[in-house]
Length: 395
Image (cartoon, rainbow, N blue to C red; front, top):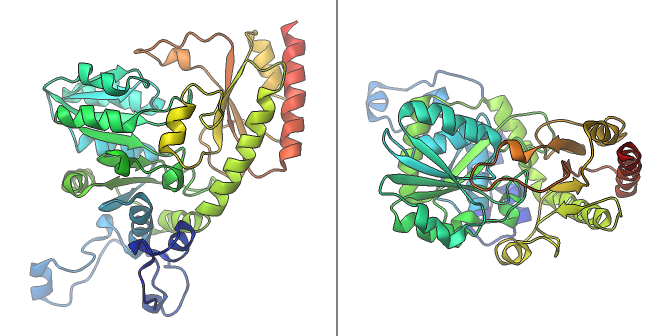
């Protein structure tokens, strides 16, 4: 239908998102790749069955709907290939399992997603794999933690609770010198604003549930890899039997079409509210890497072209009653896990309960804010009233 493939680098990211992964000529002219549901794929002949060369052999390995999503994500990340999985956690666990065997060691950022810690400290430990945690700001110092059996380093940049930015080129150099692969959770910025593979990563992971889906109505995860890492990741996914249904894949594809527009709005609104919060007398700090006040702002400007919807708000020390006063009566911000949808969220978090490599000693109460698409002035007013309630409860 088109004389150029939008994924070949000749077009902008907005055009790539609009056109990649769909072929109306193959779908009777319909714009979107439809939902394919099915387990059994039929072969025309014994020769076809024996050759195993059909595009799709069995439903568990994918279908045109899942393939359409994988094509878009591959193009966005500049990857060799990508896989769609049922959740972000599934993507992380499959990626890690692709890199380890009994007796191996993995290094994980101390700011990593909490379910990853539970997987590493529980499941991987039972497999005989050691998990150690490192300072998210360690950079080239990671080389001092590498062991002969270290096969994977997992980074999350920035961390989705405490928002440290990691020096990926330095981590990649240290990991590769020690014979390990660098895995990066890129959910916060999305590939629109951050390209870990270009900075030396081997595997990039997304909780597609968040920015890719964008509507809080589906689960998804993706893994994108270099050519060298591809076969191990594909084998792990195949052997574990992870499958994403056509219905879920269709919702991911739908969300991806508007990713550039949504990310632009999330970024603009989040920065405006973060800057406004910094000016409020009741606020101790705002943890947003795109703000000049952030300790990793220089590193952020070097490696990122934009920012996400999520940041931290630190308020002065106060009892639980003050935290409840802040969140329980918010009119527009809701409390809930996840983020990336159209609705704004506010979640009290306690990183001190999770950190081991670098204890979280910052005093005060930390809240994680996701900025959605409500009017910015309305969100400011909601937060302003919450700050007043918090201060009143401190007295």
